[in-house]
Image (cartoon, rainbow, N blue to C red):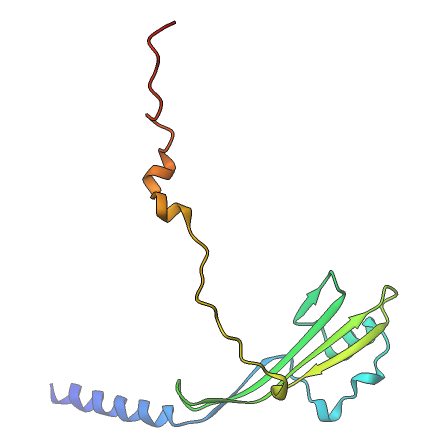
Length: 144
């Protein structure tokens, strides 16, 4: 029993030391904006060749979205984003670049959620009534 408590104590101390370790997490494409000039790119092929496939493609407006984020994580409660970049390429019909937009952490906006919700008729009527709603509602006539 004493060995179990000792092992549990060592495991607890090890967990505490590991959680103090700061990690760097990258998500999306790793875009180094200091070493790259987006204005030198001319068409869609050059964009894909230099940056790879985009994170998101908007087929209606012909936009390519590239996203990159660098985050320092110490534990669940201590996370900070140090670098976030989103580059949006808009293309013409002949696949040349129409415009390039670049967004970073300074362009971030807080979005407030609304408290309104869409009414759910299924919950109001009930699942059983929704499934068997038409059964037994009409009275059969005895006349032929």
